[in-house]
Length: 312
Image (cartoon, rainbow, N blue to C red; front, side, top):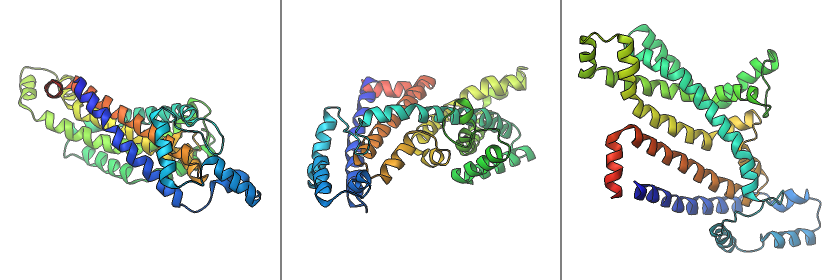
């Protein structure tokens, strides 16, 4: 098991190298100049050249990248070109907002999708099953930014029930969490239904029914427990996806998370902030997915035995 964890952590290294170099190369070739962003375009040519030298932008790309990676090995992600603050410090300030949004979105998904998926499986082929699957497909096909705008117009501007953006406490989480959670609910409902259908057809459940166990206990205790393994996997994967892909939702709702930080830094050509934030986000997601694998092993003895065998 420990060898498996160590090997999974090692796999993060080539990902970081590839992602960081790609960001450096893309931003280096992108139009615009971070110096103009910092100075507002009002500096003299001499001041511009001096600032470029101070930031190291007058050196070749590969030299700058090698220096950056050298700093990364020492645990130094550099400082923002714009604010002058440590990249890690700024990222650490923004990460809790993204994690809070991810947890709220997953909770919305779990609360809606698991009961809906169970109902669809129990009533397979009937009108309730068909209606729930159509609703899941609609939720899956609905773009987050469009749904977010509709929610803002309806519940913020017209009904004035929720803030239209920013982080003003738990009430600010409602609309962005519903926006992200709707798509997650659609996926998790289909997975829950499929997993429950596989379990419901097993012989041991027929035996339980034959012994007089109530249908509610058969479904909620025996069937759901054995159907949880793929559901847990999907929930963990969705959590990682929300951390990595909530950029549009954070932008629509002006949510002060990591996704919006990266977008603002891209516009500002703030290479250290973009690179460092994406590296830290990659590490965060990798740790989350590793945690999902370990939870999967804790739930399923077969997987736990496989990991133990591979780590011996």
